[in-house]
Length: 173
Image (cartoon, rainbow, N blue to C red; front, side):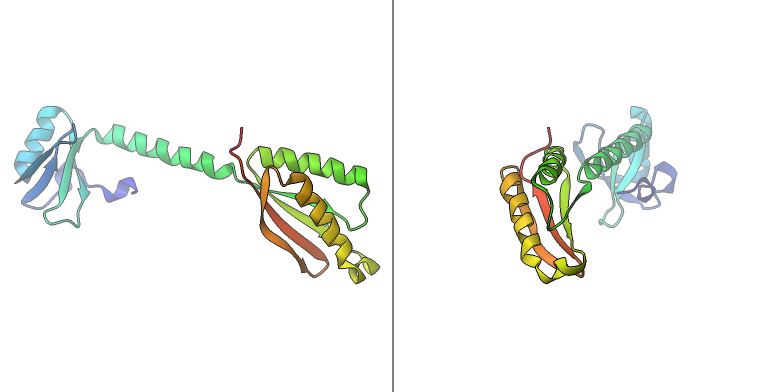
């Protein structure tokens, strides 16, 4: 929930609220004035956490600390999201063994870091007449990297490109 959805002391306009103290103990239904007094005695704020409940649920807590922890939690989830970046390996149907090996080393590094890898085989000119050559390259990629990944999307042609998606099976180090 965003911090804007929470109401503090003076904005609570109902007569009675269900109160939870700063330790997390439920104190039951009390008058709003009594809840404000208890929050003031504890040196904290009275925050409405569930305005749609009947009666609304209020909690005694340090609002500044609460917002700080909430922002910190949101920043933490952003870091986790960024770890699954999409990386791309480009290959050709007539790729040399050494070039393919080099790209597979890169692909292994990406997968070990926890990234998804999209393998793209690009066809030119008369190579379009033999898509099985591209499929063979894709099979080699899967055989080599199959110990640390699984195929999320099987190879398929889209115009002059054959694409396949690989996802890591292990946790990033």
